[in-house]
Length: 276
Length: 245
Image (cartoon, rainbow over the protein chains, first blue to last red):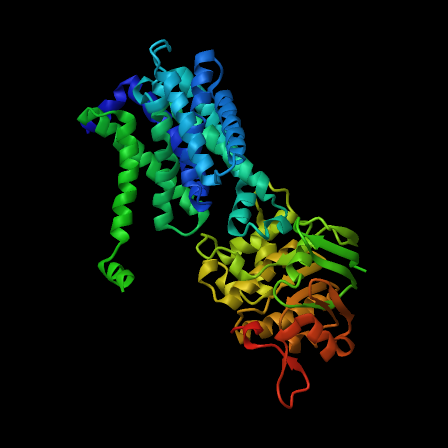
């Protein structure tokens, strides 16, 4: 019992857990839409593309959310411009822009003249989360959840049948833009703790796991939240006792749970049937 | 008059895909929209639904328009029940940001009861038969409570039981005063509607079926795709255009 409670006697572990709960709950609920809209790869590209915006905001002392918004708009404009270049298809344009922007962000963050701590935006610093970070990500998480609750019905109808959604009163373009903005905001919620690279695990892992097990959207959101919380606890215990990086341990356990369940669903007869 | 269309033409930015369309829908009228694939049925619906701006012409329609798409357009792997789908109809009645309450739930359950699916309300939409799915989509349109319904080939891929039930239901809806526009490939069924609209990239004819569905009109509507069975008075379409049940 002592071993179970001991980690939580440290304030830095309490703060890490709280930060993971914020990003975990938002990631679980939003992640269900990312998975159902088949936007997992787009979400990852978005996270990378807005990275220079985050770094620029940190360098200028501006709110990270502002940086994320600027990063998303900059990336969208760059993709739109690159697509116009002759001989470049849309997928190539996206790949060029995303890798270029991510490289630019890393360059800015890891330059010797940059102030220390910016590399935390890349890999996160879960155990170094401050009270101020917590207040900011908690407030943003609450806003994201309120927006997700308000958008639930248009999101459900648009994902079900984009073609007939307008006749019901939903506007697919606005729904897509709202989803994009929420992904950018969720990345900001989790970036201090998990970093730009690992935050995607919180956005996709629990929802993908829940998708394997349940077949109603609200139940999927509930189960994804449970998975996120369990993985947050598991990852922090692992980090505390095995002395491994906390963010990586949490992201690893999230993906690990998904892999175990997904592999468990692969039955030998299914494999032989697919071969036949 | 519930819908009125005057000299409508439409395109998707390129060549004109539909032109010279003039018709109206009276209260409680069932109008069959006939034409080959690519003949302009879906384009007409998209214009009426406000998804496509007409190239020229004008139309009047009620603010609320119910649309029943083909079930193939919805995602069968989507994690929703029949009741969830019926509840989507509340989007046009209840502000999008508000959660559904008891009243909406009652309306959705009543709509499912009307299409004979009360017992399957909690079933996964994708696991229902084609006919049952089509009835769920009609229930969704009923929840919208629209005075005019557009139905895109509602009998396509539907089993006999569901087709009979659907046809009776549509008759009831018309009797309540709702105008129905039904895209269909089934000529025999179209003969039972009040009026038919024949399209083949332009309006070929519009009027009561007994006067309108002449061999000349059908040939112009369907071009070479029309055949006549020996001894049959009606022209019949090749098998690939029939409902596949």
